[in-house]
Structure formats: C-alpha cells, structure tokens
Image (cartoon, rainbow, N blue to C red; front, side):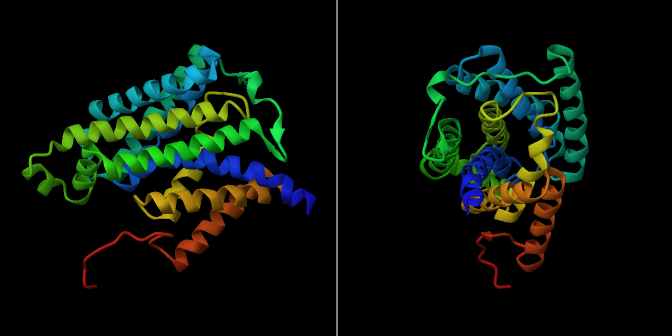
Length: 282
C-alpha cells in the first residue's frame, strides 16, 4: 500500500506532462488532421530554452515563444501544402524531427544536460514534491487557457468554425490560413511548456521528445479526437497506468502494457472516451 501511495505523485506528474504535450496535439492532430511527428522536437526546444536561460519563470514564456515560432515556421513553410493528406504530413514531419534532433546534437552535444531546479521548489507537501506539484499546476493552467481560448474568445470560435467546415468558414469571411497559423503557434508553444516541465524531473537531451510523442498521440486518440475533456481523462489514466506498470515491471514492459491497454480500449470504444457530437441520423 505504501508503494502504491508513493507512486501516485509520479503518475500524476507524468499525466501532467502528457497532458501538456497532448494539448498541442489536440488542436493540430485532433482538430486539423495533421500528424506532426516533429511535435516532440518542440518539447526538446522548450527544454533546451530552459537550459540556456537557467531561470524557470523566465523560461516558461520564452519556451512557449521559441517552440511556437518553430511550429509556425513549419506550418507556413511546409505543412500548409499538405492539408488533407495526413500520411504525407507524417512523413514530412518525421524527416523534420530527424533534422532537428541532429541540429540539437550539433549545438548542444549528444550527452544529456541537467537543468537545476530553483530552490523554492525544493521540499514537498506530504508525499507530493513541490516540483511535481508545479508541473501539475502548469498542466491545469494549460487546460484552462485552451478552454478559455476556444470557448470565450473570437479567435477560438473562428478556430472551431474552421475545424468544423473549412469552406463554409471561408465563405463567412474567416481566413483559414490565419487560423491555421495561430493554431500551430499555440499547439507548438504548449509543447515548449511541456519541455520546461520535463527539466524538473529529468535530464535534457536531443531525443527527449521521442520518449513522449507516442504516448501523447495515444492520449489524443484514447480521449477522442479534438476533445479537450477526453484528453484530460486519458492523460490521467495513461500517466497513472504507466507509472504503476513501470514500478512493478520495467520501462520497456510498461510501454508495451500501456500500448496494449489503449488498443484494447479502442476495440471497445473506437471513438475514444469523449465522442465528437454530431447531428447525423446514423
């Protein structure tokens, strides 16, 4: 029982990181149909931004901006020519991810580097260390920010209109291209925030993003494509499952168990935890 309780904060912090990564994928993959395999490298860019600045509070907005601009450049430079072709975007962004990983090795070296946590995050509250509590709070803030943006702002409502029917939105005076740019900027920026969060629980390396990108896609698919509430529930479930499975076995077997659990769940509920509402009669 003690081991189960002690693993809880680890599982919740993993869930928080997955949620931050999946929030970006929810808008770029779940809503726009773009399979962005370079999303993991935006995580890595955010983590290296924290390494360069060595200041957590300054690194958060800086990482959001750096990763967001990288995503914006990728969308404008390449992805916008491949909308409606998800497999092509997968191959394209996979190639970009390899280039970015090699660029990181050239700039920072292949060995992992460590980002020291600020002194005010030392200690903890009961079984919850302050650094993991900070990651959870960051994830909650990210969810709240995305929800407010999509439901309470004019730009968010335009984003939803483009997602539901791009042609109809264009005839209504909405510029889909500008919406796409903003969506990619926000989604990529959230990945940068996840990278900063990861510096609080482990080292930073060129392959950092590859450890989380597959799990983040599983969160989006299991939660329901484009469904914010589903992403939250799936992230918590998969984070806790991964934590406890890794504790009782090892990291490799834990990944297999999580993947198998998601496949089994999708056999029962292929639309995910939260299905997209539709007016269709069938």
